[in-house]
Length: 222
Image (cartoon, rainbow, N blue to C red; front, side):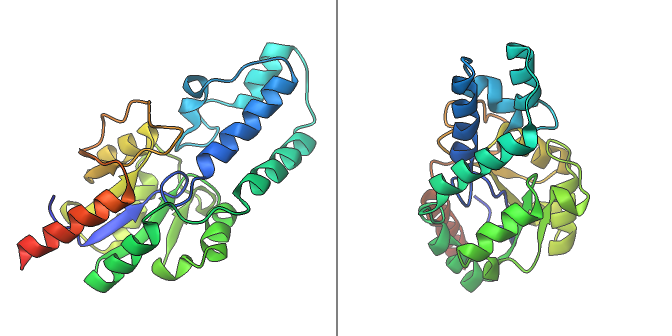
């Protein structure tokens, strides 16, 4: 691995294991209505939100019913937050972020989620300190696999694409990195472990493995 001068992190499933909680909230709702939602069905949402496939519309199609989505989503949000109440950063994330800061590697986040969601969790987990700026869907950027979020993050880092690295857990995110011309490493979360992540330049099992690889790359540059 070439040592990057800047790293662009996805948020959901990379820094915090939020993807599983969000998916589980939909599974519960589908089960309540006598329907099934598989990971494969839901996979177009990963890294992109509900722009490419909407589980709400699909449930209405399956049941022939109309739902009060304001109420349903409020209940799902309560379920998600309950699941995440005692969650921290992904294993190895804090150590990696601290190491990157000490190594002078510039950091940012680019996420298809809302700023309220991403910034809220980063602040709650005392991790916003590592990111001078973050880029989110609600800042006006098209969601992944559109490269807009990553291009904005790369422009903020003020580095050429060859000096940047994207850390992703979803196919949509990896396709966005490819479209932006930025090399990527796939680190799967629970939800994406058995999905197609072949669009990545590198594949690693964890943030700890990435940390070790970066440390080795730093040694080779000395």
